[in-house]
Amino acid sequence: MRTDLCGNLRSSDIGREVVLCGWVDRRREHSEHLAFVDLRDRTGVMQCVVDGGRDLRSEYVVRISGTVQERHGGKSNENLATGEVELQDCTVEVLSVAEPPPFPLDERTDVDENIRLRYRYVDLRKPRLQHNLRVRAKVNSAIRIAMEEQDFVEIETPMLIASTPEGARDFVVPSRMKPGSFYALPQSPQIFKQLCMVGGIDRYYQIARCLRDEDLRADRQFEFMQLDAEASFVTQDDVYQFINHAVRGATEAVTGVRPGEIPSMTWHEAMERFGSDKPDTRFGMELTELTELFSATEFNAFKADCIKGIKVDGGAEYSRNQLDGLTDDVKSWGGKGLVWMKVEPDRSLNSPVAKFCSDAELQGLVDTLDAQPGDLLLIVADRRRTVQNLLGRLRIQIGRPPVTEGGLHFLWVTDFPLFELNEAGTPVPAHHPFTMPHEDDIALLETASGEGFLDIRSQAYDLVLNGWELGSGSVRIHRSDVQQQVLGLLGIGDEEAQAKFGFLLDAFKYGAPPHAGFAIGIDRLAALLAGEENIREVIAYPKTQTGADPMTQAPTPIDDGHLQELGLRVVPQD
Image 1: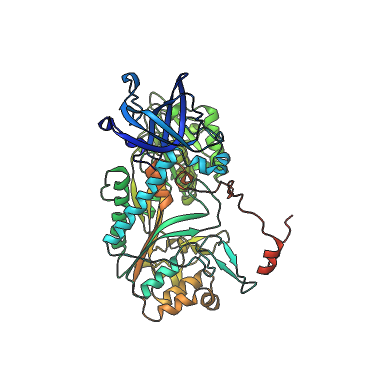
Image 2: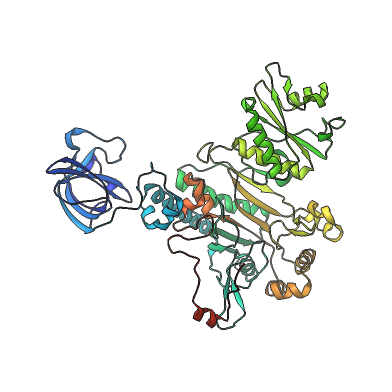
């Protein structure tokens, strides 16, 4: 139906007869007999000179044939790639009429997200989303090429599986053939890719769809896509090289620039310096240790296990209301309070609590934080992990630049704790229950108790980009005795372990190779490469923050007959 795409025509095409198809982006009347129509397709916009009497409205779908010529009057449009030419002597065929769109399709107008998602098929016509989805396609393509270059084989794993405890809630699917029983949708292909290793596949990968019933936010949706990879007879460093090659290839495919080697730091260093296990290293404002400085302090608020501070360059301009707001934020996050001090022109410190500190302590603060006139010092004293968390959140809230600024800063974070503690003080997996403990810490599985569980390191690692966790991986447990020991510490006894993981534990009895793997969020990587703050902008049909789909109205009730067929009954909610 067409010979060319709208956005591809240039001055070198002058004199050619072409046929274009697309949507009417804009119409401008030139005279009673002449009108300019901007015709839009996925590649861009082309100006067409048409009969002013034609009824061509916004978003009509049309086919226009004509001759490429220099723009009317020689006036080029520098804002368009096609701005030096236009289509003249046009013949127009209306392929489909359209009602006025529910919102303007220019990027200058803010539109409520629910309206955008209600009419997502219209929203997708915007150049921004057209660009973003093509960025995503380039990422997928580059990843596949990179993995196949490294001799990985793509294998699809099941979508209907048994429910397993992997940290988030499962989405479940009732079985019609076995009423009262349910499938779960996979939170990840974790167990199946490990079984591929037992099966001798050696190097597996998949761009897998995963589903988790957890609260949505800017970097999280119910369903998401990830590069899932696993390899046998490899070390942690081997996995870094596999994933580095894929990520660097995807970045180059989108930006045209291949990143250099990706640096790494331990989880402990990340928490001490940045107060986060996914540090945004595009900016400074690092956490500075102050505990020793105040070891003999008389200031009761600083009599704590840990004291740290951050320096906000030029932050002395903060008003008292702003500082009170920061203090309220810290308290809302579970902190006892926040100490602030402004650096005066003579480098003395101005603060309501300065009088409670000795001159040596105040001077030590200035020297340790390298404070300069006009800076603001923010200090928290509490338990070490609390201090890290509070100052880490403050650092991001105050200093994080927009996603489009500062470049792409990839980082490996290694040596995560094997366990975290829940509210009851019992251990839960920091990653998942199939992560191999650090070789030097395996003996602690026998002796650890309470907070001692937090000292057991794992052979786990995360890839971080600009403060977003792109993905996680680990060396896996391939010995059934270690696996059963870890499950036991998580409160999963032999009987329950056999019921939930028997097929994995049984497989290990038949010769499981040492293996390791990784999973990286495609949505997150594509969003950051596209310069977006929310992964919804690189997903064709996302859900809202409440998990709803305004276009299809999902989730919806199902009729009583279907419920009866499945052996289900809806319990009324108060």
